[in-house]
Image 1 (cartoon, rainbow, N blue to C red):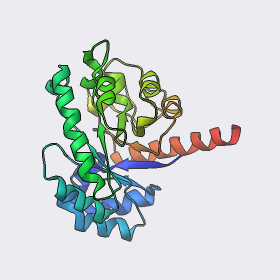
Image 2: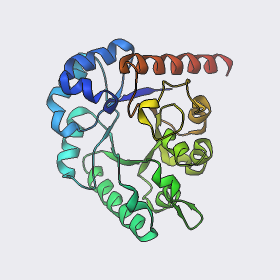
Image 3: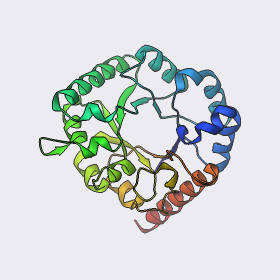
Image 4: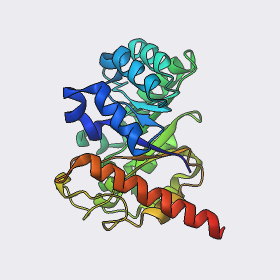
Amino acid sequence: MSYSLQLYTLRNAISEDLPGTIKKVAAIGYTQVEPYNFVATAKELGAALKENGLTAPSGHAPLMSQDQDEIFTAAKELGISTVIDPFLPAEHWQKAEDIQATAEKLNQAARKGAGYGIRVGYHNHAWELESIIDGRTALEYFESLLDPELVLEVDTYWVAVGGQDPVDILAKLGDRVKFIHIKDGPLTRDNKAQQPAGQGKVPVMDVIAAATSLEVGVVEFDDYAGDIFEGIAESLAFLNSNTAAEGATA
């Protein structure tokens, strides 16, 4: 199993010292990261990743609101092969026609991305699971409208906060899911209450097992009350030890 770190987790440290933060991430044991805002930081970030032997298989960028050519060019420079749109507010997920329009925008982005050799995906929050369209969650309805080459990055914590079982949702979304966000905590909207993997209410290893076409599991904290570097280290240690244990019994 391959694990990565969403760099938004370390946004405060990155704003103060990007190279030093990336060096710490590598020292903790991460070999992959998922950048955000990478158009603005591409040169400095690329140098830091190279210096520390890190790769970035995926990255977050607002494909539906910013210059796609700029995004895909920067992604190519950084070796990012999947660009994921990270956020579309709740009002876009209440009506079937709005979801259809969003799917078409992303389908168009994917066609442009293909010209750069880059795949396109979408990352959910809670509202795509809270909204029900024609008897299923808005995320499932959205998935049914996407072209085959598009992928999903399911934020499994926000699925649970949105009132759905992440194991069940992952089974329903099937092979479309190539990435998941791994986080833990009390399943509330209090981001500072989030916890390292294995310390909250999410059945983390069951969730990972349910994503049968998973390429990368991405550790993320939206926020954290403790030392964030300790938090990401504890998450990685939990994942590595449990993955090794499962591998030994397989």
